[in-house]
Image (cartoon, rainbow, N blue to C red; front, top):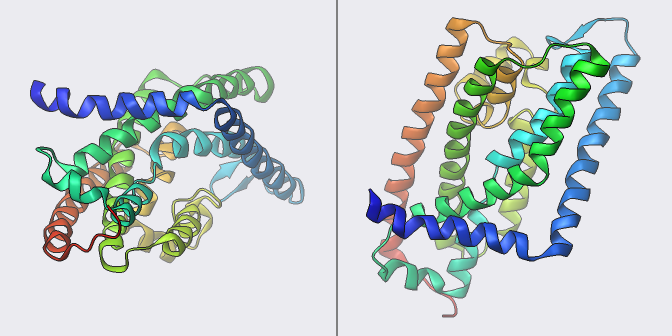
Length: 272
């Protein structure tokens, strides 16, 4: 265990240092990410303002405010794309060097993603989270989120992070067959924003569609931890969604291992 930590922890630390070293990108990231959240906020407030219903899709107006900004916080720490790194390694030929090193390529990518996740949580997600809690209590008149909900949210977010990066690793493996997946990654990004509940809460869909989402990993990436934070699951439902996340972690890990064995037998390197 200590040996693995000595090998893979530097990947996370180096990624964190890399992100902090570019000040221009640092401030631009904060501006763009927070701007998109406020666009969603004003859009949903207009939707709630145009109806007499107190609740839409199982969420009140105040709960939707929390949902919007907790989606941003959750996405920042969970949705770290490693398929970009896989594609870059294949195109540049650096994947060949990674294969001959005494380390697990997938674990090195996950470690880098962990460093990026830590950076995006510290800047600016944690400040938005604190500001949201203050806004909830002082303006919306809601109660402070309980410690139990926060703890379960973190547990769920950890599994969401693993689900996303393991899924993204499988997507990145396509680069071994096509060598260039930029267009595919754009499509993936657009679809995930819809399927994970980032754009529209999954509770807004018909019940039959929600049941389909229950059998897919995408709802476990963003929607599940946010709904746990809002306290929308009872004890039985909470056990089910957490167990479902754990199952998807195992399934995607096994799928990634299987694909990895297949692609390394037909590796084609460009450059290097």
